[in-house]
Length: 246
Image 1 (cartoon, rainbow, N blue to C red):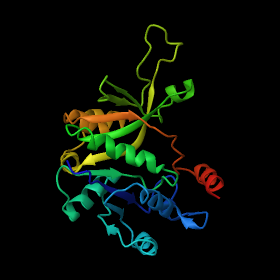
Image 2 (tube, rainbow, N blue to C red):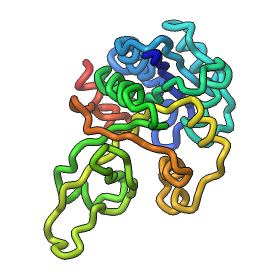
Image 3 (cartoon, one colour):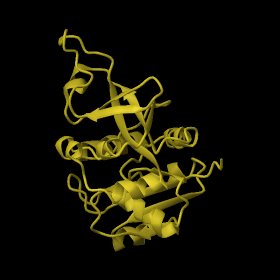
């Protein structure tokens, strides 16, 4: 099987919690340029930034020609990635890694790991990563997405609830895993996901990946091989990343 894979970086201008964050300056470069430069170290055959903004297009064009304007009305980054795959005419089994445009410290090793996870498991439609939950605060935090998986690394369920729940000894935190929002999709899985309306589980949990499980798609998951740096969602995150990258 060909080891070809692609990377798409969705870069929407108007994020709700931190407006214009993909263009905010970090160590003399816009945030999205840090993401792009890390992705260029991974070994993908193409790295494309997908935006909905003329301003982002203009800024990004100063460091790469691989930028595509996509529909401004997409509900998620997944929809934006699917549009790029369709515009480029990529083959149905091709893995496409969705790297968030607000992840300026994404380790190239993690991007490669999630691509390889899909390449090495031809029956899987999606691959993603997780890390151990290390505190009760994380375990009980509904903003921390938990995941359970089987002995072969196939995802069983994702939840904002504390799973697995230690029903018989609630004071004891069981072995639990935090999901990282880094995905590799096959092009045909992107097409299936984006042509299917949200299912009830997804609407209840507000987790898009539950649509894939509801459709019966196999999601392969593995513990991240290297530590992952912080994404930028808030002003505090931005200041932390600026200190780390200065």
